[in-house]
Image (cartoon, rainbow, N blue to C red; front, side, top):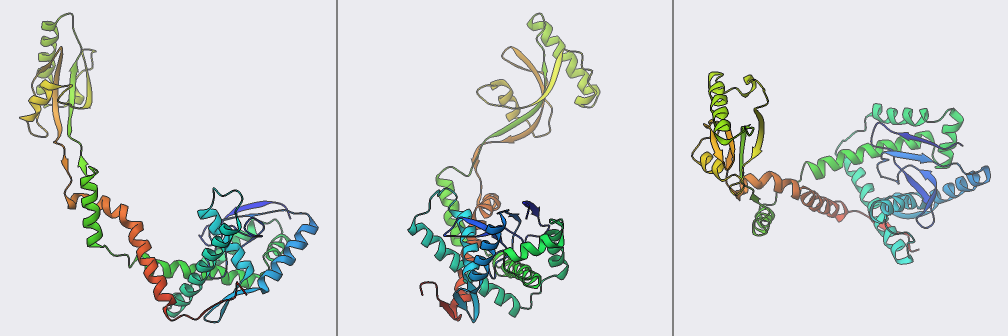
Length: 348
């Protein structure tokens, strides 16, 4: 089978590989109860390698490592999930030790148990997979192979029939749907956490808004001497007022430039002092600041200050979103496992 690569239009196909203990060679869809996520690469061993890997996959499908309310989780699914966990959380580990491999294995098994229970909850709540989405994923997968034999070889590699693959994709939809309902839609604010984070950020100076004194100005270019430059500035101001303070109607003749700048009281003392007595939107006359002449409109006048909690709420909610989601996810996992019958056969 030649090496191919495809990108599913849905989020239900992903790279989950069969390996021992973590590194893989035979590709497979996601583990039992898992969503089959985004992208999958199909490797091309020689014929003997293909046959050997297919035999391993078939045998691994028969080895049961856990039962969740009667539903079985097999070794093939576990190895696949181990690769997902390793890729997500252990990317920097070049040679996993026995201890790390065991940690990966246990995390993978926990994830499989959770997904099995989540799919079961989705079915109880009446969530249904969309047949057209499943068909779209199947069609995209088939189109990645030049022939029916190629797709059939892929199914043989992962030790599944087409109907079993469809069932996995359906399960992915159920998992996505129930997670959205039970985690994202039920993620609630934690007032105590919000207050705590606000105080921490304020004390650390992270809610300090920088001063914002901004103008749109005409900077008069230096003439042969100061009186000449001042006279040019006065003429430009007269033109500006005749045009109802419309910067765009000024004739660009090389005697000035128009720009938007942040005003700093130390760098631009005269401009800063002038704009303090002006309102946002108001136009100045000619202002001499050191050796330069300016005509400006005030765009913003905001001294440095701490944001109020209301002003900071959006930022804090964004920062706390993952916290609230993980908190809700942990609560949901406890709810799912409370009355579940989980039998672990891994150590046996």
